[in-house]
Length: 155
Image 1: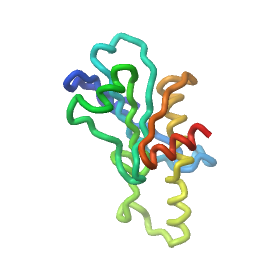
Image 2: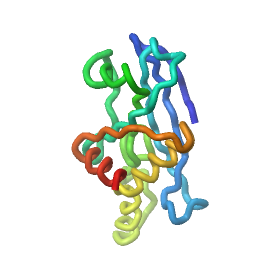
Image 3: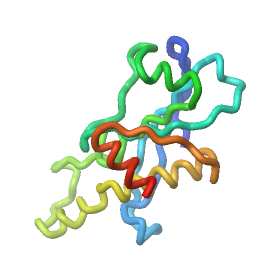
Image 4: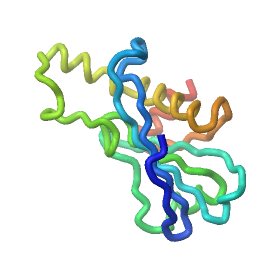
């Protein structure tokens, strides 16, 4: 689950790789990986603070990579452990790339792509939440398509 933890500027950053089902109706079937990066303030290292999961816009873009201790991530990490999720098919999660896909017919490819919709992004988030914090609540933040994912999550 946890790949790597390091300090950067005033942040503590932990990288995670989670294994999730491609198809949640077949949990024992093919697995894909989901990358997530957790960020919190060094000053909160020994405090119990809640999580905020961020759903990036796109679809098709990875979550932000903090290059500086600034902006909304700086502010959010004052009160939360911010979890930046590379949604399935994006960033360091299992990609959707033509060369990486086995030879599929158009119908098979169309079916495969149905597993990369918002409903499965929400299922991934729930599986990750269960592994990180159990049934405890977390807050949601979404931008553009990520806002659509957050609304889907809440519904």
